[in-house]
Image (tube, rainbow, N blue to C red):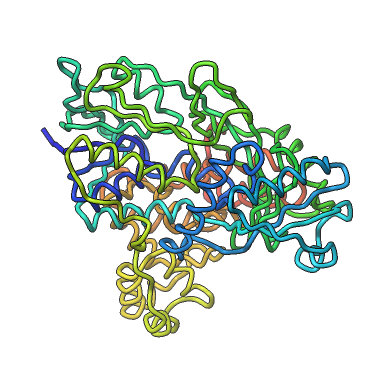
Length: 537
Protein backbone atom coordinates (compact mmCIF):
# COMPACT_ATOMS: atom_id res chain seq x y z
CA UNK A 1 0.00 0.00 0.00
CA UNK A 2 1.22 3.48 -0.85
CA UNK A 3 1.29 5.77 2.17
CA UNK A 4 1.63 9.41 3.10
CA UNK A 5 1.31 11.10 6.46
CA UNK A 6 -1.29 13.49 5.00
CA UNK A 7 -3.44 13.01 1.91
CA UNK A 8 -5.15 16.04 0.39
CA UNK A 9 -8.19 15.43 -1.82
CA UNK A 10 -8.74 18.05 -4.53
CA UNK A 11 -6.39 19.67 -7.02
CA UNK A 12 -7.84 23.17 -7.06
CA UNK A 13 -6.13 26.27 -5.69
CA UNK A 14 -6.87 25.40 -2.05
CA UNK A 15 -5.64 21.83 -2.40
CA UNK A 16 -2.36 22.73 -4.10
CA UNK A 17 -1.86 25.53 -1.57
CA UNK A 18 -2.20 23.04 1.29
CA UNK A 19 0.16 20.65 -0.50
CA UNK A 20 2.81 23.37 -0.78
CA UNK A 21 2.42 24.62 2.77
CA UNK A 22 2.66 21.17 4.37
CA UNK A 23 5.57 20.11 2.16
CA UNK A 24 7.48 23.27 3.12
CA UNK A 25 6.95 22.36 6.79
CA UNK A 26 8.51 18.94 6.19
CA UNK A 27 5.29 16.91 6.22
CA UNK A 28 5.04 13.81 4.00
CA UNK A 29 2.05 14.91 1.92
CA UNK A 30 0.32 13.61 -1.20
CA UNK A 31 -2.46 15.24 -3.25
CA UNK A 32 -4.97 13.22 -5.30
CA UNK A 33 -7.25 14.68 -7.97
CA UNK A 34 -9.83 12.81 -10.05
CA UNK A 35 -9.05 14.75 -13.25
CA UNK A 36 -6.26 17.14 -14.20
CA UNK A 37 -5.28 19.84 -11.74
CA UNK A 38 -7.25 23.10 -11.76
CA UNK A 39 -10.14 21.75 -13.84
CA UNK A 40 -12.86 23.08 -11.53
CA UNK A 41 -13.71 26.47 -10.04
CA UNK A 42 -10.06 27.55 -9.74
CA UNK A 43 -9.82 27.91 -13.52
CA UNK A 44 -13.46 28.61 -14.33
CA UNK A 45 -13.75 32.13 -12.98
CA UNK A 46 -12.98 35.69 -14.08
CA UNK A 47 -9.37 35.60 -12.94
CA UNK A 48 -9.76 38.56 -10.60
CA UNK A 49 -7.22 39.12 -7.84
CA UNK A 50 -9.58 40.92 -5.49
CA UNK A 51 -8.68 44.12 -3.70
CA UNK A 52 -11.57 43.30 -1.37
CA UNK A 53 -13.60 46.26 -2.61
CA UNK A 54 -16.40 44.00 -3.73
CA UNK A 55 -16.98 42.89 -0.12
CA UNK A 56 -16.29 46.18 1.66
CA UNK A 57 -19.94 46.70 2.62
CA UNK A 58 -21.42 43.29 3.37
CA UNK A 59 -18.39 41.18 4.46
CA UNK A 60 -15.50 43.21 5.82
CA UNK A 61 -13.67 40.17 7.15
CA UNK A 62 -13.51 38.79 3.60
CA UNK A 63 -12.52 42.25 2.34
CA UNK A 64 -9.58 42.47 4.75
CA UNK A 65 -8.44 38.96 3.86
CA UNK A 66 -8.57 39.82 0.16
CA UNK A 67 -6.47 42.98 0.35
CA UNK A 68 -3.85 41.31 2.53
CA UNK A 69 -3.59 38.25 0.28
CA UNK A 70 -3.64 40.45 -2.83
CA UNK A 71 -0.37 42.01 -1.73
CA UNK A 72 1.17 38.65 -0.83
CA UNK A 73 0.31 36.98 -4.14
CA UNK A 74 1.76 39.91 -6.10
CA UNK A 75 5.03 39.24 -4.26
CA UNK A 76 5.26 35.44 -4.38
CA UNK A 77 3.67 34.90 -7.80
CA UNK A 78 4.83 37.84 -9.90
CA UNK A 79 4.70 35.96 -13.22
CA UNK A 80 1.07 35.00 -12.53
CA UNK A 81 -0.26 38.49 -11.76
CA UNK A 82 -1.03 41.30 -14.17
CA UNK A 83 -1.11 44.41 -11.99
CA UNK A 84 -3.63 46.30 -14.10
CA UNK A 85 -5.28 48.12 -11.20
CA UNK A 86 -9.00 48.37 -10.68
CA UNK A 87 -11.74 50.95 -11.01
CA UNK A 88 -15.16 51.05 -9.35
CA UNK A 89 -17.68 53.15 -11.28
CA UNK A 90 -21.17 54.22 -10.27
CA UNK A 91 -23.76 54.81 -12.95
CA UNK A 92 -26.54 57.37 -12.64
CA UNK A 93 -28.96 54.45 -12.14
CA UNK A 94 -27.03 53.12 -9.12
CA UNK A 95 -27.83 53.97 -5.50
CA UNK A 96 -25.75 56.98 -4.31
CA UNK A 97 -26.25 55.93 -0.66
CA UNK A 98 -24.46 52.66 -1.37
CA UNK A 99 -21.46 54.61 -2.64
CA UNK A 100 -21.04 56.29 0.74
CA UNK A 101 -21.34 52.95 2.54
CA UNK A 102 -18.74 51.49 0.19
CA UNK A 103 -16.26 54.34 0.72
CA UNK A 104 -16.52 53.89 4.49
CA UNK A 105 -16.31 50.10 4.16
CA UNK A 106 -13.09 50.35 2.16
CA UNK A 107 -11.62 52.67 4.77
CA UNK A 108 -12.58 50.31 7.60
CA UNK A 109 -11.19 47.29 5.68
CA UNK A 110 -7.83 48.87 4.87
CA UNK A 111 -8.49 49.13 1.14
CA UNK A 112 -7.09 52.17 -0.63
CA UNK A 113 -9.97 53.57 -2.71
CA UNK A 114 -8.90 56.78 -4.44
CA UNK A 115 -11.61 59.01 -5.90
CA UNK A 116 -10.86 60.38 -9.38
CA UNK A 117 -12.57 62.93 -11.57
CA UNK A 118 -14.77 61.85 -14.46
CA UNK A 119 -12.26 63.40 -16.84
CA UNK A 120 -9.56 61.15 -15.40
CA UNK A 121 -11.85 58.11 -15.49
CA UNK A 122 -12.57 58.61 -19.20
CA UNK A 123 -8.89 59.24 -19.88
CA UNK A 124 -8.03 55.89 -18.29
CA UNK A 125 -11.06 54.05 -19.71
CA UNK A 126 -12.26 55.85 -22.87
CA UNK A 127 -14.96 53.28 -23.63
CA UNK A 128 -16.88 53.75 -20.39
CA UNK A 129 -20.55 54.63 -20.57
CA UNK A 130 -21.38 58.33 -20.38
CA UNK A 131 -23.79 57.39 -17.59
CA UNK A 132 -20.84 57.04 -15.16
CA UNK A 133 -21.18 59.67 -12.42
CA UNK A 134 -18.32 58.74 -10.06
CA UNK A 135 -15.19 56.59 -10.10
CA UNK A 136 -12.54 55.24 -7.70
CA UNK A 137 -9.22 53.46 -8.21
CA UNK A 138 -8.49 50.31 -6.16
CA UNK A 139 -5.63 47.76 -6.19
CA UNK A 140 -7.45 45.03 -8.14
CA UNK A 141 -5.42 42.89 -10.55
CA UNK A 142 -5.76 39.93 -12.90
CA UNK A 143 -4.30 36.53 -12.01
CA UNK A 144 -3.71 33.38 -14.06
CA UNK A 145 -5.33 30.58 -12.06
CA UNK A 146 -3.72 27.80 -14.11
CA UNK A 147 -0.21 29.17 -13.74
CA UNK A 148 -0.53 30.07 -10.07
CA UNK A 149 -1.75 26.58 -9.20
CA UNK A 150 0.90 24.78 -11.20
CA UNK A 151 3.62 26.90 -9.67
CA UNK A 152 2.35 25.86 -6.23
CA UNK A 153 2.76 22.24 -7.31
CA UNK A 154 6.27 22.86 -8.65
CA UNK A 155 7.20 24.49 -5.35
CA UNK A 156 5.69 21.61 -3.33
CA UNK A 157 7.60 19.03 -5.35
CA UNK A 158 10.89 20.73 -4.50
CA UNK A 159 10.08 19.96 -0.85
CA UNK A 160 8.98 16.37 -1.45
CA UNK A 161 5.26 16.87 -2.05
CA UNK A 162 3.61 14.27 -4.30
CA UNK A 163 0.71 14.54 -6.74
CA UNK A 164 -1.54 11.95 -8.39
CA UNK A 165 -3.90 13.19 -11.08
CA UNK A 166 -6.70 11.19 -12.75
CA UNK A 167 -7.03 9.37 -9.44
CA UNK A 168 -10.56 9.41 -8.05
CA UNK A 169 -11.30 8.78 -4.38
CA UNK A 170 -14.03 6.12 -4.15
CA UNK A 171 -13.83 5.28 -0.45
CA UNK A 172 -12.50 6.35 2.93
CA UNK A 173 -10.82 3.64 4.99
CA UNK A 174 -11.59 3.97 8.68
CA UNK A 175 -11.61 1.79 11.77
CA UNK A 176 -12.73 2.51 15.31
CA UNK A 177 -13.70 6.06 14.33
CA UNK A 178 -10.25 6.81 12.95
CA UNK A 179 -9.16 7.43 9.34
CA UNK A 180 -6.48 5.07 7.99
CA UNK A 181 -6.49 5.90 4.30
CA UNK A 182 -8.47 6.11 1.08
CA UNK A 183 -9.48 3.82 -1.74
CA UNK A 184 -8.91 5.27 -5.21
CA UNK A 185 -9.62 4.38 -8.83
CA UNK A 186 -7.29 5.03 -11.77
CA UNK A 187 -9.25 7.04 -14.38
CA UNK A 188 -7.69 5.30 -17.37
CA UNK A 189 -7.32 1.68 -16.26
CA UNK A 190 -10.17 1.41 -13.76
CA UNK A 191 -7.76 -0.23 -11.31
CA UNK A 192 -8.67 0.32 -7.65
CA UNK A 193 -6.10 0.41 -4.86
CA UNK A 194 -5.53 1.90 -1.42
CA UNK A 195 -3.40 4.77 -0.13
CA UNK A 196 -2.71 4.88 3.60
CA UNK A 197 -2.57 8.09 5.63
CA UNK A 198 -2.76 9.42 9.17
CA UNK A 199 -4.69 12.57 8.27
CA UNK A 200 -7.10 13.17 5.39
CA UNK A 201 -7.89 16.70 4.19
CA UNK A 202 -11.02 17.12 2.09
CA UNK A 203 -10.36 20.15 -0.15
CA UNK A 204 -12.58 19.04 -3.01
CA UNK A 205 -14.44 22.34 -3.44
CA UNK A 206 -17.89 21.82 -4.92
CA UNK A 207 -17.40 18.06 -4.50
CA UNK A 208 -16.50 18.31 -0.79
CA UNK A 209 -19.97 17.15 0.25
CA UNK A 210 -19.67 14.00 -1.87
CA UNK A 211 -16.22 13.23 -0.44
CA UNK A 212 -17.61 13.64 3.09
CA UNK A 213 -20.37 11.16 2.26
CA UNK A 214 -17.69 8.54 1.52
CA UNK A 215 -16.79 8.79 5.21
CA UNK A 216 -20.50 8.76 6.18
CA UNK A 217 -20.34 12.42 7.15
CA UNK A 218 -22.36 15.46 6.11
CA UNK A 219 -20.88 18.78 4.99
CA UNK A 220 -23.13 21.57 3.72
CA UNK A 221 -21.74 22.67 0.36
CA UNK A 222 -23.93 24.33 -2.25
CA UNK A 223 -22.42 24.51 -5.76
CA UNK A 224 -23.21 27.98 -7.13
CA UNK A 225 -22.71 28.21 -10.88
CA UNK A 226 -21.32 31.36 -12.44
CA UNK A 227 -21.28 31.94 -16.21
CA UNK A 228 -18.76 34.24 -17.88
CA UNK A 229 -17.97 35.55 -21.38
CA UNK A 230 -14.47 35.91 -22.87
CA UNK A 231 -14.10 38.67 -25.48
CA UNK A 232 -11.37 38.65 -28.11
CA UNK A 233 -10.38 42.24 -27.37
CA UNK A 234 -8.97 44.11 -24.42
CA UNK A 235 -11.99 46.31 -23.80
CA UNK A 236 -10.64 47.75 -20.54
CA UNK A 237 -7.23 48.77 -19.21
CA UNK A 238 -8.28 48.22 -15.59
CA UNK A 239 -10.48 45.73 -13.81
CA UNK A 240 -13.80 47.60 -13.91
CA UNK A 241 -16.49 46.96 -11.27
CA UNK A 242 -19.96 48.48 -11.00
CA UNK A 243 -20.26 50.36 -7.71
CA UNK A 244 -23.48 48.84 -6.45
CA UNK A 245 -24.58 45.78 -4.50
CA UNK A 246 -22.94 42.66 -5.94
CA UNK A 247 -24.96 41.39 -8.85
CA UNK A 248 -24.64 39.59 -12.20
CA UNK A 249 -22.47 40.87 -15.01
CA UNK A 250 -20.80 43.73 -13.18
CA UNK A 251 -17.08 42.89 -13.43
CA UNK A 252 -14.79 43.27 -16.47
CA UNK A 253 -11.32 41.73 -16.08
CA UNK A 254 -8.59 42.27 -18.71
CA UNK A 255 -6.25 39.30 -19.29
CA UNK A 256 -3.49 39.80 -21.82
CA UNK A 257 -5.28 40.51 -25.09
CA UNK A 258 -8.78 39.48 -23.93
CA UNK A 259 -11.44 40.64 -21.46
CA UNK A 260 -13.66 38.46 -19.26
CA UNK A 261 -17.13 39.62 -18.24
CA UNK A 262 -18.76 37.95 -15.28
CA UNK A 263 -20.50 36.54 -13.58
CA UNK A 264 -23.89 35.03 -12.77
CA UNK A 265 -24.98 33.23 -9.60
CA UNK A 266 -27.20 30.17 -9.80
CA UNK A 267 -27.50 27.30 -7.31
CA UNK A 268 -27.08 23.96 -9.10
CA UNK A 269 -27.43 20.37 -7.87
CA UNK A 270 -23.92 19.33 -8.92
CA UNK A 271 -20.54 20.98 -9.34
CA UNK A 272 -20.24 18.98 -12.56
CA UNK A 273 -22.72 21.38 -14.17
CA UNK A 274 -20.53 23.72 -16.24
CA UNK A 275 -23.14 24.24 -18.94
CA UNK A 276 -23.78 27.64 -20.48
CA UNK A 277 -26.69 28.92 -22.56
CA UNK A 278 -27.50 31.66 -25.01
CA UNK A 279 -29.97 33.04 -22.47
CA UNK A 280 -27.19 33.44 -19.89
CA UNK A 281 -24.99 35.14 -22.50
CA UNK A 282 -27.77 37.58 -23.41
CA UNK A 283 -28.38 38.26 -19.72
CA UNK A 284 -24.71 39.14 -19.14
CA UNK A 285 -24.55 41.30 -22.26
CA UNK A 286 -27.67 43.25 -21.33
CA UNK A 287 -26.14 44.16 -17.96
CA UNK A 288 -22.57 44.63 -19.17
CA UNK A 289 -23.55 47.09 -21.90
CA UNK A 290 -24.78 49.48 -19.22
CA UNK A 291 -21.10 49.98 -18.29
CA UNK A 292 -19.67 49.67 -21.82
CA UNK A 293 -22.38 50.76 -24.24
CA UNK A 294 -20.75 49.32 -27.38
CA UNK A 295 -20.17 45.90 -25.83
CA UNK A 296 -22.03 44.00 -28.55
CA UNK A 297 -19.64 45.33 -31.18
CA UNK A 298 -16.84 43.20 -29.75
CA UNK A 299 -16.27 39.63 -30.80
CA UNK A 300 -16.99 36.99 -28.17
CA UNK A 301 -14.56 34.08 -28.02
CA UNK A 302 -16.54 31.75 -25.81
CA UNK A 303 -18.71 31.40 -22.72
CA UNK A 304 -17.72 29.21 -19.79
CA UNK A 305 -18.93 28.42 -16.30
CA UNK A 306 -17.70 27.14 -12.96
CA UNK A 307 -19.26 26.38 -9.58
CA UNK A 308 -18.34 28.24 -6.41
CA UNK A 309 -18.25 25.88 -3.40
CA UNK A 310 -20.38 27.93 -1.00
CA UNK A 311 -20.36 26.69 2.59
CA UNK A 312 -23.90 26.19 3.86
CA UNK A 313 -24.08 25.89 7.66
CA UNK A 314 -27.53 25.11 9.03
CA UNK A 315 -29.79 28.12 8.46
CA UNK A 316 -27.21 29.88 6.28
CA UNK A 317 -28.04 32.08 3.28
CA UNK A 318 -27.63 30.88 -0.31
CA UNK A 319 -26.47 32.40 -3.59
CA UNK A 320 -25.13 35.97 -3.38
CA UNK A 321 -26.39 36.12 0.20
CA UNK A 322 -23.93 33.43 1.29
CA UNK A 323 -20.59 34.48 2.75
CA UNK A 324 -17.49 34.30 0.53
CA UNK A 325 -15.47 33.44 3.61
CA UNK A 326 -14.18 29.92 4.29
CA UNK A 327 -14.69 27.32 6.99
CA UNK A 328 -12.56 24.47 8.35
CA UNK A 329 -14.33 21.47 9.86
CA UNK A 330 -12.41 19.20 12.24
CA UNK A 331 -14.44 16.01 11.98
CA UNK A 332 -12.94 14.65 15.20
CA UNK A 333 -14.54 17.50 17.12
CA UNK A 334 -17.74 17.68 15.10
CA UNK A 335 -18.43 14.04 14.23
CA UNK A 336 -16.06 11.93 16.32
CA UNK A 337 -13.99 10.78 13.32
CA UNK A 338 -10.31 11.20 14.12
CA UNK A 339 -7.90 12.21 11.38
CA UNK A 340 -10.19 14.00 8.90
CA UNK A 341 -10.69 17.68 8.04
CA UNK A 342 -12.81 19.48 5.45
CA UNK A 343 -12.11 22.99 4.17
CA UNK A 344 -14.79 24.72 2.10
CA UNK A 345 -15.77 28.15 0.79
CA UNK A 346 -13.37 31.02 0.23
CA UNK A 347 -12.04 32.58 -2.95
CA UNK A 348 -9.06 32.08 -5.24
CA UNK A 349 -7.58 35.32 -3.86
CA UNK A 350 -7.51 33.84 -0.36
CA UNK A 351 -6.35 30.33 -1.28
CA UNK A 352 -2.92 30.78 0.36
CA UNK A 353 -4.45 32.00 3.63
CA UNK A 354 -6.91 29.10 3.60
CA UNK A 355 -4.02 26.69 3.09
CA UNK A 356 -2.06 28.26 5.94
CA UNK A 357 -4.97 27.98 8.37
CA UNK A 358 -5.60 24.38 7.32
CA UNK A 359 -1.92 23.44 7.57
CA UNK A 360 -1.74 25.02 11.04
CA UNK A 361 -4.45 22.67 12.28
CA UNK A 362 -2.96 19.61 10.60
CA UNK A 363 0.49 20.35 12.00
CA UNK A 364 -0.96 20.83 15.47
CA UNK A 365 -2.34 17.27 15.27
CA UNK A 366 1.03 15.97 14.09
CA UNK A 367 3.06 17.86 16.68
CA UNK A 368 4.87 19.72 13.88
CA UNK A 369 5.96 23.17 15.11
CA UNK A 370 7.32 24.52 11.82
CA UNK A 371 5.97 27.93 10.88
CA UNK A 372 4.27 28.79 7.60
CA UNK A 373 6.63 30.33 5.03
CA UNK A 374 4.38 30.48 1.98
CA UNK A 375 3.89 34.25 2.24
CA UNK A 376 7.62 34.95 2.02
CA UNK A 377 9.10 32.48 -0.46
CA UNK A 378 8.33 32.99 -4.20
CA UNK A 379 6.55 30.09 -5.87
CA UNK A 380 9.23 29.72 -8.54
CA UNK A 381 12.39 31.68 -9.35
CA UNK A 382 11.97 34.13 -12.19
CA UNK A 383 13.67 33.60 -15.54
CA UNK A 384 16.62 35.99 -15.68
CA UNK A 385 16.81 38.78 -18.23
CA UNK A 386 20.07 37.27 -19.47
CA UNK A 387 18.37 33.94 -20.18
CA UNK A 388 15.51 35.64 -22.02
CA UNK A 389 17.90 37.79 -24.05
CA UNK A 390 19.86 34.72 -25.15
CA UNK A 391 16.63 32.89 -26.05
CA UNK A 392 15.09 35.61 -28.22
CA UNK A 393 16.92 34.42 -31.33
CA UNK A 394 15.09 31.06 -31.10
CA UNK A 395 11.59 32.00 -29.95
CA UNK A 396 8.99 33.71 -32.15
CA UNK A 397 8.57 37.47 -31.90
CA UNK A 398 6.79 38.37 -28.64
CA UNK A 399 6.95 34.71 -27.61
CA UNK A 400 10.00 34.73 -25.35
CA UNK A 401 8.45 36.53 -22.38
CA UNK A 402 5.23 34.53 -22.68
CA UNK A 403 7.11 31.24 -22.67
CA UNK A 404 9.30 32.34 -19.75
CA UNK A 405 6.29 33.08 -17.53
CA UNK A 406 4.59 29.82 -18.53
CA UNK A 407 7.60 27.54 -18.18
CA UNK A 408 9.70 28.82 -15.29
CA UNK A 409 13.52 28.84 -15.36
CA UNK A 410 14.27 25.11 -15.58
CA UNK A 411 11.77 24.23 -18.31
CA UNK A 412 12.54 27.46 -20.16
CA UNK A 413 16.26 26.55 -20.24
CA UNK A 414 15.46 23.08 -21.60
CA UNK A 415 13.11 24.41 -24.29
CA UNK A 416 15.61 27.10 -25.30
CA UNK A 417 18.29 24.42 -25.69
CA UNK A 418 15.88 22.31 -27.77
CA UNK A 419 15.00 25.22 -30.08
CA UNK A 420 18.67 26.11 -30.48
CA UNK A 421 19.61 22.53 -31.34
CA UNK A 422 16.70 21.70 -33.64
CA UNK A 423 15.17 24.55 -35.72
CA UNK A 424 12.16 22.36 -36.58
CA UNK A 425 11.09 22.57 -32.91
CA UNK A 426 10.61 26.33 -33.38
CA UNK A 427 7.48 25.64 -35.43
CA UNK A 428 4.45 27.44 -34.00
CA UNK A 429 1.71 24.99 -33.15
CA UNK A 430 -0.47 27.80 -31.82
CA UNK A 431 0.04 31.21 -33.42
CA UNK A 432 -2.54 32.89 -31.20
CA UNK A 433 -0.62 32.17 -27.98
CA UNK A 434 2.90 31.81 -29.47
CA UNK A 435 3.30 28.17 -28.40
CA UNK A 436 6.15 26.33 -30.12
CA UNK A 437 6.45 22.66 -30.86
CA UNK A 438 9.38 22.49 -28.45
CA UNK A 439 7.22 23.81 -25.61
CA UNK A 440 4.42 21.33 -26.32
CA UNK A 441 6.90 18.45 -26.38
CA UNK A 442 8.41 19.61 -23.09
CA UNK A 443 5.02 19.69 -21.41
CA UNK A 444 4.04 16.35 -22.92
CA UNK A 445 6.92 14.78 -20.97
CA UNK A 446 5.34 15.78 -17.65
CA UNK A 447 4.11 12.74 -15.74
CA UNK A 448 0.75 14.48 -15.29
CA UNK A 449 0.21 15.11 -19.03
CA UNK A 450 -2.21 12.49 -20.29
CA UNK A 451 -4.24 14.55 -22.78
CA UNK A 452 -3.82 17.52 -25.08
CA UNK A 453 -6.16 19.41 -22.75
CA UNK A 454 -3.65 18.89 -19.94
CA UNK A 455 -1.04 20.66 -22.07
CA UNK A 456 -3.59 23.36 -22.94
CA UNK A 457 -3.95 24.27 -19.28
CA UNK A 458 -0.18 24.68 -18.98
CA UNK A 459 0.51 26.56 -22.22
CA UNK A 460 -2.81 28.20 -23.30
CA UNK A 461 -2.64 26.11 -26.48
CA UNK A 462 -5.90 26.60 -28.40
CA UNK A 463 -7.22 29.30 -26.05
CA UNK A 464 -6.66 32.26 -28.38
CA UNK A 465 -8.50 33.80 -31.31
CA UNK A 466 -9.01 30.71 -33.46
CA UNK A 467 -10.04 28.47 -30.52
CA UNK A 468 -8.02 25.46 -31.74
CA UNK A 469 -9.11 25.79 -35.37
CA UNK A 470 -5.56 25.16 -36.55
CA UNK A 471 -3.62 23.94 -33.53
CA UNK A 472 -5.89 20.98 -32.74
CA UNK A 473 -4.62 19.09 -35.77
CA UNK A 474 -0.99 20.07 -35.22
CA UNK A 475 -0.90 19.34 -31.50
CA UNK A 476 -2.65 15.97 -31.88
CA UNK A 477 0.00 14.91 -34.37
CA UNK A 478 2.84 15.94 -32.06
CA UNK A 479 1.23 14.46 -28.94
CA UNK A 480 0.73 11.13 -30.71
CA UNK A 481 4.48 10.94 -31.24
CA UNK A 482 5.69 12.06 -27.83
CA UNK A 483 2.85 11.00 -25.50
CA UNK A 484 3.61 8.38 -22.88
CA UNK A 485 0.80 5.86 -23.38
CA UNK A 486 -1.80 4.46 -25.77
CA UNK A 487 -4.32 7.19 -24.96
CA UNK A 488 -1.84 9.81 -26.14
CA UNK A 489 -1.26 7.95 -29.38
CA UNK A 490 -4.97 7.98 -30.20
CA UNK A 491 -4.46 11.14 -32.25
CA UNK A 492 -8.00 11.17 -33.69
CA UNK A 493 -9.62 10.80 -30.28
CA UNK A 494 -7.32 13.43 -28.79
CA UNK A 495 -8.15 15.89 -31.56
CA UNK A 496 -11.92 15.34 -31.23
CA UNK A 497 -11.79 15.82 -27.48
CA UNK A 498 -9.79 19.02 -27.88
CA UNK A 499 -12.18 20.45 -30.49
CA UNK A 500 -15.29 19.44 -28.56
CA UNK A 501 -13.99 21.22 -25.48
CA UNK A 502 -13.67 24.42 -27.49
CA UNK A 503 -17.06 23.89 -29.17
CA UNK A 504 -18.80 23.65 -25.80
CA UNK A 505 -17.86 27.26 -25.03
CA UNK A 506 -18.33 28.62 -28.55
CA UNK A 507 -21.85 27.32 -29.11
CA UNK A 508 -23.62 29.85 -26.80
CA UNK A 509 -21.91 32.80 -28.54
CA UNK A 510 -22.53 31.84 -32.18
CA UNK A 511 -23.08 35.30 -33.59
CA UNK A 512 -21.69 37.18 -36.60
CA UNK A 513 -18.03 36.47 -37.24
CA UNK A 514 -18.03 33.57 -34.80
CA UNK A 515 -20.49 31.68 -37.02
CA UNK A 516 -18.26 32.23 -40.05
CA UNK A 517 -15.21 30.96 -38.18
CA UNK A 518 -17.03 27.86 -36.99
CA UNK A 519 -18.10 27.11 -40.56
CA UNK A 520 -14.44 27.30 -41.52
CA UNK A 521 -13.57 24.87 -38.73
CA UNK A 522 -16.31 22.48 -39.83
CA UNK A 523 -15.13 22.65 -43.43
CA UNK A 524 -11.54 22.05 -42.41
CA UNK A 525 -12.13 19.03 -40.22
CA UNK A 526 -15.32 17.42 -41.52
CA UNK A 527 -14.95 18.08 -45.24
CA UNK A 528 -11.20 18.24 -45.80
CA UNK A 529 -10.15 15.60 -43.25
CA UNK A 530 -13.41 13.61 -42.99
CA UNK A 531 -13.42 13.94 -39.22
CA UNK A 532 -16.87 13.69 -37.69
CA UNK A 533 -16.97 15.29 -34.28
CA UNK A 534 -19.76 13.02 -33.13
CA UNK A 535 -22.55 14.09 -30.80
CA UNK A 536 -22.12 17.69 -29.64
CA UNK A 537 -22.10 18.24 -25.88
